[in-house]
Image 1: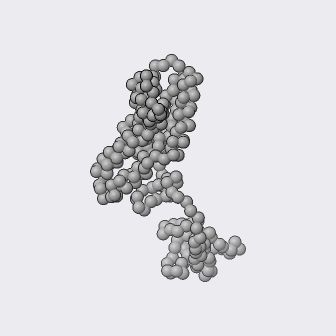
Image 2: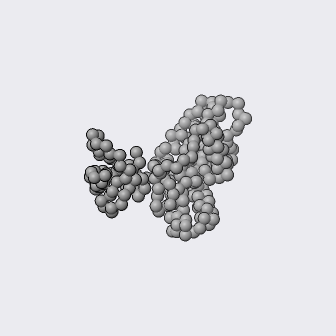
Image 3: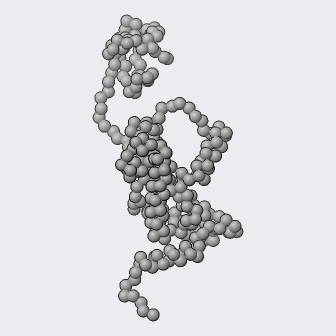
Amino acid sequence: MDFPNRYDAPASERRWQQRWAETGLYTFRPDDPRPLFTIDTPPPTVSGQLHMGHVYSYTQAEAMARFWRMRGRNVYYPFGFDDNCLPTERFVERQLKRSAREVGRAAFIEACLEISRATEDQFEALWRSLGFSVDWNLRYSTIDARSRRTAQWSFIDLHRKGRIYRTLAPNPWCPECQTAVAQAEMDDAERDTTFYTLSFLLTAEAQRRGEQQESSIPTATAAQRHDDQNNSAASASLRLCGEYLPIAT
């Protein structure tokens, strides 16, 4: 047998990956009597290209999967992609070079599904090239019918148990996306700004209030008053515009 002068690592990797797929080496078998070990990895967000951080973090789960297989466990190791989220919508807008409102609801949903599927195929090819021992027959996405049905069932179940509720409350809002956003989707930064103090008239006495919240609706103020005086006024006059504002205590 003739041996090559140099080891062809990429060719060898492809050969073994094909062998694993053909033999079903990492296929999960529910009827296996061995103790079950489940790995629930958070699915990577479909919002761009994978990077070294993805490889580093998911390699840790891969090490656990191989360890517990060697310990005799039946390892349940699916893999999925998070494509039911605002970052995916923004990613699709960048690909289309048009906003969702410009494209239209139905066409944009179809574009999201098409682009996310193509991107997920690229992601899977990368994970396979790294030799991950995943059962790719169990691949899922957070926007597929099963995931949506499971999420809806979970919300209904939690509501019946009184663990979640619906109410009107302040929430971070993106004026560009025209939707509420999570804290994790915002970049916080501290900067110097101006603190304004407004003068009000309560009856005949001038008071000063530090505005705590920029708003055009009922808001919170740092009220200053003299406890030895009876301030029972129902409204205050704002010197800036001369309007009378109701006081709620």
